[in-house]
Image (tube, rainbow, N blue to C red):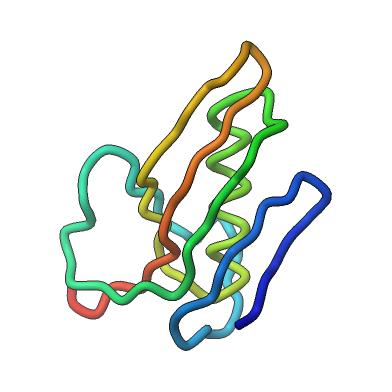
Length: 98
C-alpha cells in the first residue's frame, strides 16, 4: 500500500492501479450527485482538518486525486467542526464509460 500525505495528516490510500498524474484542474468534482459513469476507485482520500473553507478542502482532494491519475473525485462526506476546520472523505475515481 502507498500512502500519500502532508503535515495535516491527509492521505490517499491507493487501492487501484494509479495512472499518470494529471493537473488538478482537470479532475472533475462530484460533490452532491453520484458520477454518471461506471468507474473504478483508484484511491480513498481522507482530509482530516485544518482547512479554512470547504473550497480549500475540496481543492486538496482534487490535488490528491490528480496525483494518482484520477479523472474525478467523488466527495462522500464533509464536516465543519469549527469556523476554521473542515474535514471530509472522497474517492479518487476514473470513469470507465462515457
